[in-house]
Amino acid sequence: AIRPRFVWSSLRMKGSLLQRAYRGLFTHEDTMNFHKTLGGLCLGHFIYRFLLVGDRDMDFGPSLSTPLWIGIHALLSASALIFKIPTKRILEGSRIWPEYRLHSIAFAYRSLACMLLIWVEDYYRTQNGGKLEGAPNFYWNVLIVMGTLVAADAGTWWVGKKSRSSTINDLKAPLAMKYFFSVMQFHATMNCLIGVRRYATQFIYVWIIQFTAFILTLRRKNLVPHTPSMVFYGIMLSFGFCVNFYDLRTENSFLMANTLANLAAFLRLGCRMPKYLLWALMSVLAHFARLTTGLDKSSAMGRSGGKFWTDMGEIWFPLYAVSVCLVIALGVMKVAYKKMPYSSVKKTT
Image 1: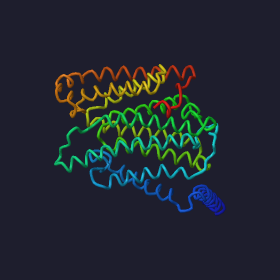
Image 2: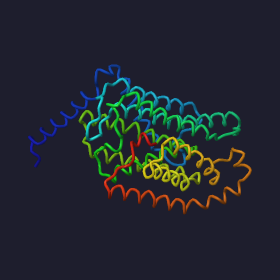
Image 3: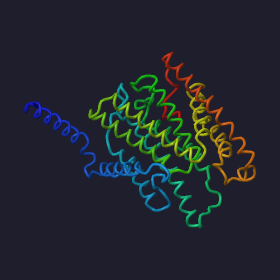
């Protein structure tokens, strides 16, 4: 039989946890509950969209509701600036700090900007009877990715030396886990650069970024333990990879996009290529790579050399296999020699 004393102590523990959560999350800095209201709206929005993963592309489209929700998620990230947080990052690394907060905003806005780009093309294509000259325009994707790098560096400069920290290197976690986190960041950046016109690809990154910031906030308030939060972050990255797998497969671009992402990770983490040079190189490679999968049909090169580029698409399977081997070999070497990737993931991607 269950003892009454045990039930009472359990209820007291739950009540204590709820009280700590209330005191930690409902602070004087957000007296109007603006940030929390936005957070609740976005959480419900994430759940709703996840129920529509697949052919429906989370049910986003050319309607005005899409930019409305993009704006709400953008406001959620920006409203985090009202809170005062510790200047320095703690040793375990799983609590939010000023540099990470600015980087979180920058990278969330990167995916939101990619979603807005898709919506603009969809909207004007609908207004023009299903046709839009010059779309999709992938030069905007290059501008968004390079602009985000500049914004992240500006954030690092703004917070000063005392508030800077290597996002992944300084994290208390197994080396293999940290390496996996690092490589997945390159996949995120490459998918923004490749520019597959699927909302879900970008929205899943918005979820990962904004929900991770929430988890780090919970950790700062001592409401969640360190290790489970890191495991859950890995689960989120894996789920995001699965969603991207589906979206890229629908555009015949999975092997191409992942080959380039693995190459970028190898060049940066293994060869220490400067990040601006790296992503400039990736932009050029992505331009020609899109032609081989039929993703870019709007450019003059795509229209004129269709068969040639389609035949070139057969190279991606062996190249993908080589890229996977390179990334795995680099990871094994770094774990074996207990040497972490070159620098902060947020700074490298």
